[in-house]
Image (cartoon, rainbow, N blue to C red):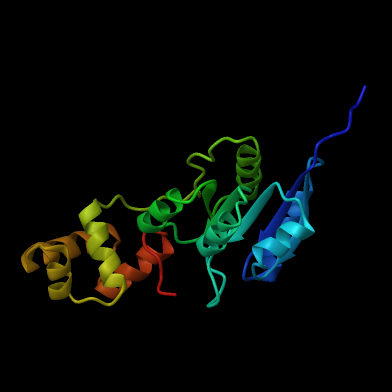
Length: 207
């Protein structure tokens, strides 16, 4: 009887090498998982797959100025690789999640997720199951979509008048949304609201 255990091979990429290596150590602890490569940048996809027949890649979305996680995954798909990828980011804005949903076999996970939940999420993806709502322990305020639209534009430095034009709504309505956002985020200024929203992962910071 063959009792050999199947071991899943994983690569981990994060712009902070210490984080990548720490996560790699954690993921390699179970007998059925092994991290075969850790780095602070993503390699050429074809060269990576030539080195390792991977079962899963864990990749940070923010990888410095040269590339980002989604672009790396799209490069993988262009060479017909369907290896599943778990994308880590501290800023899981609605816009980013929508972009992730358009890429085959790409899964999102917050960097604030507890370590045990990360391992569980990796196992789910390896089993062909969705990660589901694995979320950090903290919870953010509930904002309506139009409030998020206004907030995202505030984060890019747009003025209220420009936001009104961009969204096709009145300046008065924009100002009402800003007031609601300030209250929801417990902020005394637009800048503080933007910073709080970035910290909570409601919007992404400028790259």
